Length: 207
Figure 1 (tube, helix red, strand yellow):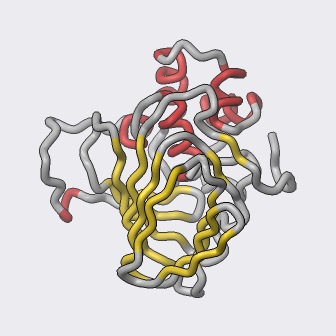
Figure 2 (spheres, one colour):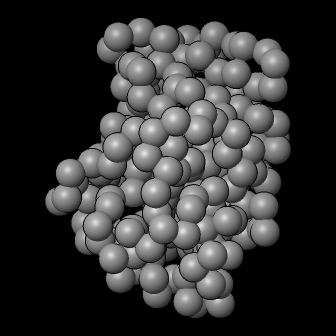
Figure 3 (spheres, one colour):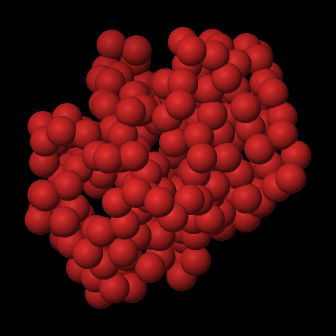
């Protein structure tokens, strides 16, 4: 689920930990210019610059896209560190984080080849963003109903339903019900020149 610079306006300052210095440090560690990183993440250089200087806060899809671009995890982007790579993640250790209207909980350890999240997607949030990127995604509906478009096919999933697909297939998810939908979501972390291609709408803030 890559990001697009055309997503709804960012959360107010303070909705996320201060990520700007970490975003810049990870880009430099990946030896990417601002222009190259922005292109790979489906953002404009101006938008990425604002994220790196703290003038904008990234949404969850933006964080996922940047994590793929830099070959890391959302946890590292947020500056979170784990004492060790414990195989077990306790429910009491899962702290919710809000980003771009979504709420997510880390459901896996850092430093792995896959990232696992529990995600709450509100109704009407980013449902018009189509995403394309290398890798695989798996999702499982915990609560509510989901509209999942894969290519030209629309799937409606309910609690207990799951989907596993190639992320190069253009895909879009949206909550069908006013109460939103809650998912388990797993994606592979791949670094690629085409790590985040967004085919979503072009209206809105593109800066």
